Image (cartoon, rainbow, N blue to C red; front, side):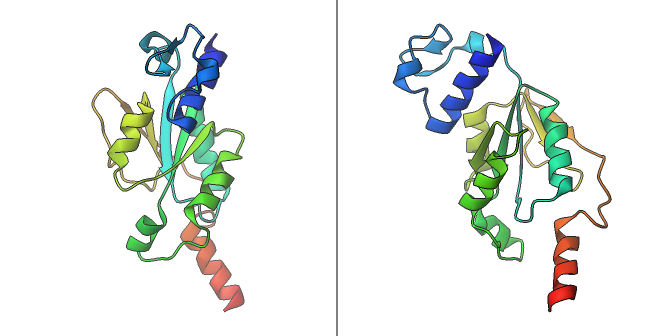
Length: 172
């Protein structure tokens, strides 16, 4: 039962609504084409996000820790414009980074970040939001558990900025 509810929830996130061919199931509000409240309460949804331009073991570690906190892991991939505002250009466009993240075994759904992070929170309705050790907890919706990971894997080696520095030293 829980596994089927997870599948329906993932379909809902990916398509905006649950596709019509699944709407005869008892866990689906047939008019709205979304999970019923009763069904949604049976799964714990975890939301996290990041840039993921140079995927490294620190990302994998953080995503696995986040996944362990619930049944469904939703990962928001930062917009290209947001990266530029922080002073650098992305190597890979958002849609490529999203596709890469979604292929990771521990990730159930990857979503493209938008202009307003609050809209994604409203869409996902997470039970938990996870921030990595180096992220600021900028979203703190009422009723949502906020988890700030404190553990890290050797950030002198496995941090995107450190990887960039090594690459530039070797090739430029």
